[in-house]
Length: 104
Image (cartoon, rainbow, N blue to C red; front, top):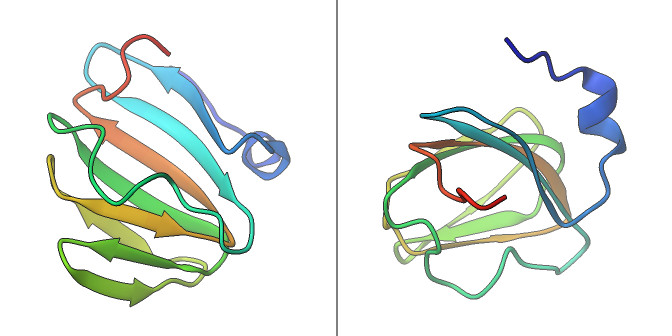
């Protein structure tokens, strides 16, 4: 069991930080400043579904040609291989299944 306390999720300041990995699932925190992006529009986890929970901020997401504005409490489901890009400002909690970044 791994408990991620609210304090850990509120204090992280790296743009992307893997918080914990099991054999089948991985969780990460992503912090994007105003106008900052998660990377180029595309995908870097073609084998893993991503569930993104907006903790703070808003920003937007582009996914497979569609754009949506985000607000705290929103949950976004991104299928494995879907081209996407998250635009800040926001703080998001991300779940990948199966593991997306085995070396982190």
